[in-house]
Picture 1: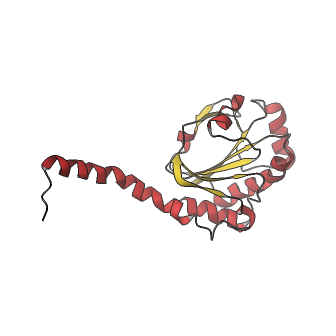
Picture 2: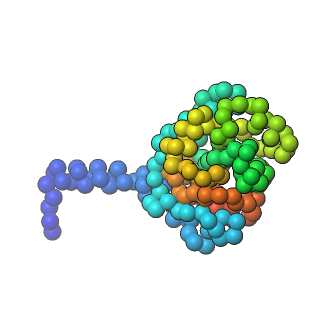
Picture 3: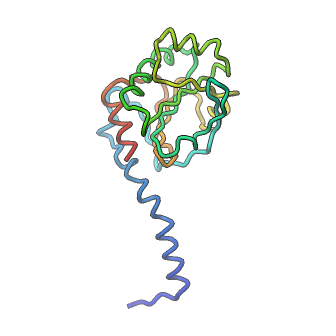
Length: 189
């Protein structure tokens, strides 16, 4: 039997305690296997391992400053889009349907418009497309887009309740499909 010196025992204990949050955070990532990445979400690229995201800032339609940290504890699907982007326009109704289907208690779609912080284009667009379950948010100066390494519109980033990126889809997806809802549920652990 090997006896560890007191300092090694304490360090080992700290290491075990420090790793406990990771053990609880792993299930969401482990739930997202190849069996879920099919059909409408087949282009979903898992982030291996999941990575903590910086607390990027954005603004709501009413001008209120917000950040990703405001949604900690929820599964978040951040979607970068613009009214002038045809694939973005095409997928927005399915994002609205996904939000309606999933509810807002444990899940939120954050559609970050890169049109600029102006209601002049986005509010009429929401009204025209009858988007009733999505909030209106702006990525002022495209800072969140740059910070998160987004170069293609639309891009959707799936974030677990701990604030880690589980993966992303570059390009359009049909978020109203059953496999999209299954992916969101798996992200919650």
